[in-house]
Length: 418
Length: 194
Image (cartoon, rainbow over all chains, first blue to last red; front, side, top):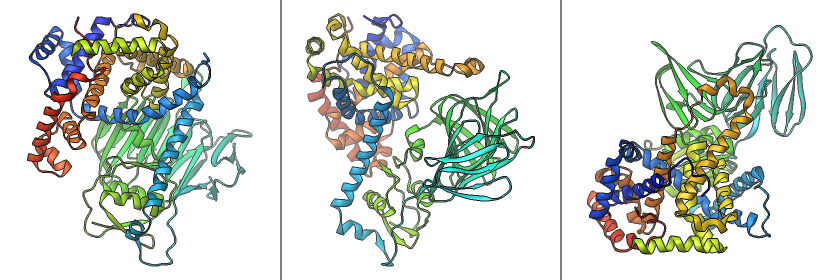
């Protein structure tokens, strides 16, 4: 058999068998003989006992189960794709085309979500729409956010950016700025200036934007966020300041054989030091915790505490959550991050899985540029499901109302009713 | 019971070996999520994990005529997924060769034991899902939460039903599982401790 040299086959068989018996034990389905068998296996090796214990520790199993369910939900589609690629024409021994495959499965998924939403819209006309009451008849639809940002140059002048305009937007010392396909790009140009000059890109509520920094690092700004950066990175470290939520794909940079770290400073509350990686920083002032989530590579999160600094190294998939006491950092904990949920915004999706209503409302506030009021306190409701972010507010509310909560829209104020 | 399962796995291997696509599909649906779970634990990238698992199945299909040498098809798939995932990581690192030297020492890799734990976990979740899939929905949620470690009262609170209703569903689930599921499930009892 191929590729099995590293795990002895007997060991693997015993392991799979033990996994099964462990689950059956939990389901109260073990016969006496099986119970004995499991006990024997556990006593064989302390490692065995540890495997069983670690499966049930903390949220372990719940987390695994959630992850399993997402893959399970994708299985049928993936099988279909597999059929299309390998069974419909005579077998070709070419390797699977990687990138198109990924893209296609994502677009399909997005389309499915949209379709679902359209169906919800279509099939629930009169009754449901009536629940999303609009007091003033002439109230316009609250449209979703879109691409757009304000760029502030070193001299203080401001440029309004949107996805429509392409081309060079400014020349300034040492750099050319241009917008391509809704992304702002910096290119080194002309002589390098001695003095460091800074630009700031900011998105208001209801806007998001993507920028390629002078070093090739790409940053996605969610709504109500900002990034301040030098027009040339000439120092020992590449430093940027951010607020709100920004996802980074940091480009590696080496100067004279030394890796130049990329450092993200979030409102002076904490700092993320990077060596070529992908990660998301959520530092909205109105969120209860400030989260840094690492997708790939390695970062160090340093927080400024009253009594000194605390530093944590993150591994891929981990999330550092910082709790604040006013402006002072209080505590930082590391847990497994829900990458899908953290990255939903960048992928154009709301992920409301297990989200509490106040969490959902803070997201809507920023994306639809609305205010939110609770008529009688914050209801204790959790939502499920995902939705694309490119639909008008009303469409979204119809779907949310399935979770037994009701809304009223007065102008740009959303009122949550029990 | 075990004999019939052994038979069904042998049968499945045989049928796939003969080019039976329906048998292949069944294996794909039964193993795909667990293999993705394992791969994702190694590569930490859901999209890549899906690709890797599809490649594993493609490889299995291409080499199906040799399948009769395989004693356990799920063990084969777990190992192939592990190896491909580790290869993926290696390749990725080569792509980042420029920076690699600078921080390679700092990047920790999953140990052999860690990955065995991941295989153990993936198989456990797979078995769990196959088992509770056959239960009525009202039972499923209770069993799931119970296994995740919540107490009867916590489950009651979470689902908005009374604690006695929770206990009732639990008892019902255990009875149902005993009656119909355990004896007949394909792939669940693939292994005989021989």
